[in-house]
Amino acid sequence: MKRKLTITAFLLALTAWLAVAVYGYFQTDVATTSLTKVVVGYQKADPVDISRQRGELVKKMKAKGYKVVFKEFQDGAALMTALKSGSIDYARLGDTPPVVNQAAGMDLVYVGAGASKENGTGVLVKKGGNINSLADLKGKRIAYAKGKVDAWVTWDPYTATAQVNQNAKLLITAKGLAKNRDFVVATRKYAKENTTVTKLFLQYLGEDMTWANSHKSEVSTMLSKTLHLSKKITNLTVKRRSFAFSAVTSAIVKEQQTIADVFYQEGIIKKQINVGKALLQ
Image (cartoon, rainbow, N blue to C red; front, top):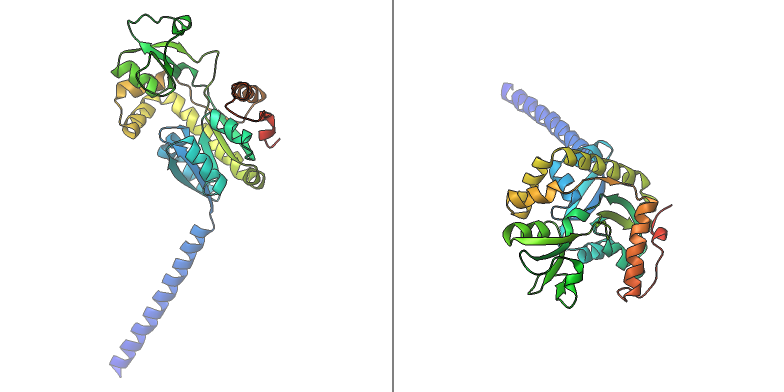
């Protein structure tokens, strides 16, 4: 009889424990699934990647009910393909992919813009050579991709890498020519339906960039590990760069419109576009 009571007590206790465990499981599951997933596409060492590695944006978004998932891509074309297919909600891009894709008919919107990167973008030539000005480039071979040429148009960290490892000379920067900004874009449909998440994401990304501006040594270390480059290269990259992210202003729209107009005149895009239409308002 005593043994029977002991078994009964054990079974009751086990039942009670299972009930608590199941309840706890459902509580945890509900807490997890109640978060709205937000998928952000980025490229290695861009502002979103810096924010991802810092970790504050994820925490802040979670506190507001959003689970941020990051996906890394190799280039802007892959990012835009993913955005079109709906596999990501936001894409971090340079200044030309949004122009090209808007001209191709994609209904995208700019939701945020980064600071100018003009000081790390420019034309590289051999140090000690006979090219000392833009006029000296007449008749020379100029490439947008690395090769056996007289000049190379590129941006950081490639600019810094060439300067440090190949003793290249930065003939001219992009100052006065192009800002080479970072942008975050989304499809118009997603942006219209998710104005709150867009506002929060942009706010927290901006806060991370403010942190980056005052912690450049830490950012340099971060980029050195991410890109597998020496601190000498990433220090140069970070030193001449400002970090910021905010809403797209009319001045920034004008910058993008200049790119779009030049691309149309040169036949890079087949359709003349109005960049201002790629905004929610």
